[in-house]
Image (cartoon, rainbow, N blue to C red; front, side):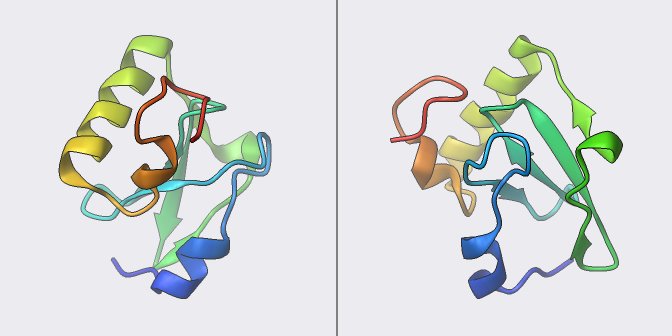
Length: 87
């Protein structure tokens, strides 16, 4: 699964308009602000709110901590604040 870095840099959550974190090995993009997971099909992000999965706050916090620890692309936008509060 590969999303070009230039593409990832311009992608934002359609609901919150905030940056997305790439979970490349898991095949999804995550927005801590809206707590939405967007799947990636054949290297194409499916950024449709109606088709995204909304996770509960505990799962959102877990994903954000994992992304920060692994320095996943996009996690730098959420380096110190809680879910939904980018730096």
